[in-house]
Length: 146
Image (cartoon, rainbow, N blue to C red; front, side, top):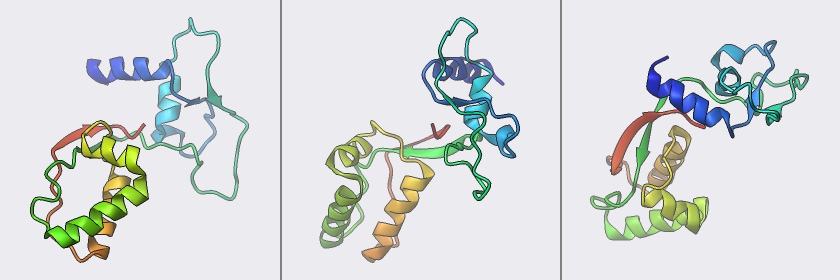
């Protein structure tokens, strides 16, 4: 792990929900489990998933977070540039309804990352409204889906 990721993991381990369940079949690929190793020994209390928690009917724990970095986008300020106005209006209305005004504007202004799941939802709304062109985002980064 490089210094930048090590520093990020140590910082996140201070406040992020971690997991100590080393019997989970997904523990080697779970961000919460990997972060548990970076919780400082000086912390008296740690917010953690109960290690005894197990849902034998689920393939993946509801608290699972993939440990692999993903491509995330940011900002929607130029998103509607190539979309016809009538279609853009319908898409904008549906996105505001889907995410709520506060989250929509934080996504639009680049204050919240557009994760792969959010991007898929945005693409589905665009397709639903007949837009199959390129989705224009303001930026792109590689990061973890916390």
